[in-house]
Image (cartoon, rainbow, N blue to C red; front, side, top):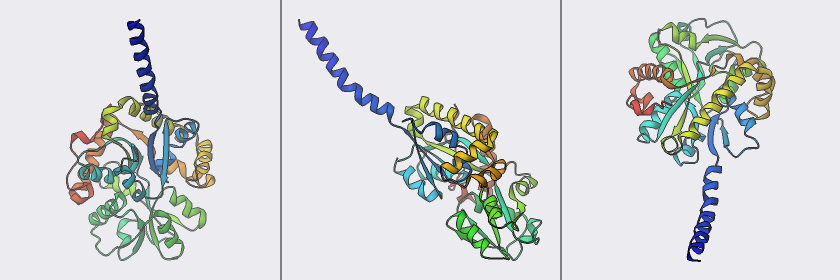
Length: 314
């Protein structure tokens, strides 16, 4: 009888504990992404997860909306500008790690006329842009420095949409925009053309591939639930591949999630640099890119180069 009572008590304890365990397992991974190529590469995963508790997605127009949520522990993963990931790693004493590269060079200088054909042609001009203290600023600054230009005025806007609006209101204006905003601009005004592909300008300097976006994860997630991170990475890779290989369907999903208009997405997707690079390939590319940024301005990577612990290796 005592043995039976002990078994019953043990069962009751187990039943009391199991709901808590199930709730923990059911808690979704909270993923933040920017309304641009980083979110566009996730749309297949977002669609597949609609009826699932595995993920909860937050989309934002600028990193300013994601960083505080990440700092407060309200996001487990976030797709961010590449240099911002290094800065946050330094500022959080290693609480975040980079797990993949999700976007390659998508930055362009656009104009309505035919006045700019090389970086030197930016002399004395004003460029509307978004991304101050982030990858776009440091990339443009490096290119201008290498070209010996000190008289270029950059008028910084809070969001890419604001830089686009400024360009549309200034017939003689220039703007630095990423895809898909370049395609949005050309849709609104067919006279707008790509004057400079900054990825090509970057590579011409022998600086390797221009990296613009990465995914970071909280170190707590990586250490405590590596299997959930591995599942996300597999899902992210599959989603990015789907988006690259199924443009009409991906564009429909992008429009459905209100990232950008479906028709614009269909035109822009081939030029959005959506990718998935992880492991040692990621590490080597990022180390070279961060070295370039650091040499130009140590503040661009948080005052120091990220140490080896920053890089997640499966």
